[in-house]
Image (tube, rainbow over the protein chains, first blue to last red):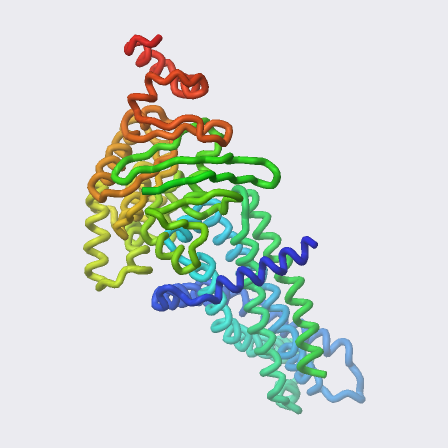
Length: 246
Length: 253
């Protein structure tokens, strides 16, 4: 019953979020600010993780498929496929749920306990729309760029480690990266990224928006935002993979 | 004028407000007083629509707020200004941007006019030269004054003030009380002030409603308050030594 209550409440909040903005220019200004806060400021951690992720995939693949029957370029191919299909869109989104999701829940939760959301409501502002819609829009706009950058850096990380440690030649790795490329995998990855961006922002905002109490409860909301975003991302990941790839 | 008729509110099975009836007059500072936990803040939140009462109506110049359509409620809300106990200024906006916020959201005037209006409001509450500071960079008293400036930016018909003096020194409290009094008369607003500060009652209260155990226990003027025979009201008002001396001086001791 509790789960059903929260699902209903969540969709009720989304109804408020997607109602007509009072002043479009103010919402757009906030969206640009959020792109910087949620997206551009996440670039460092995304880049770092992606390079190491690609490096590890390359080493793991090489050590696990070492056989005279398997051509060397398979390492590059596997790194590309793993990165595009799963590691960049899903793992980076899970990391972003931790960084961005907790930030959203803490910010909105603090505004709730400090009566700032009440102040917006009393002014006649649609507080849910004003606070949450720009975050959703920002994440939907910027997250695909982050994931594309992550894909490039992960594949680059694999090449860097593979060639510098001598486990694969540069030409074999690049041949693998180019081999049997299916453009639909990018559409699949970006579709997942956009769905995950919506999940991260809305689930976290839901936790923050309905915070009750004080600073302790803001912390609890922040933790719940990360945990629930991660769980919903994993469920959505399975459903999208089933729908789009099979 | 704001009228509250037969208003009741429960949290779960716990009744917080029971059958409240009150009239808050225009152009006056109407005060709601009572002990902590008596239900005065809940009453305020029911009147402004942050809580939905189980029973009763709230009439804003005859408009029954809780039965209005969403858009109509929004229109009424644009006629409301509110100063919160915590000031509730937006942390990420500067002093000037806080006052500009409702104007930018709703006013149909040029940006330069909005700036003029915001500056005028800030000047009215005696805040000058602090435009670019953030709420965390100004004192509690200044935050309250900026909160008042933001509340009056849209030229409201109704002003709600929740415990304006909490956390302020007596001198600053008097400044805030006087400011609320002056602005109420100047703008012809219906002001409702929630307080348990007796200095504030003596300074600003025109029409006083005493809430006790979730009920409207007593309503009257400042003068009537001092000579009332209501035991619960007297226990609340004359709890402080200073107020007991006032009573003795009036020959009621």
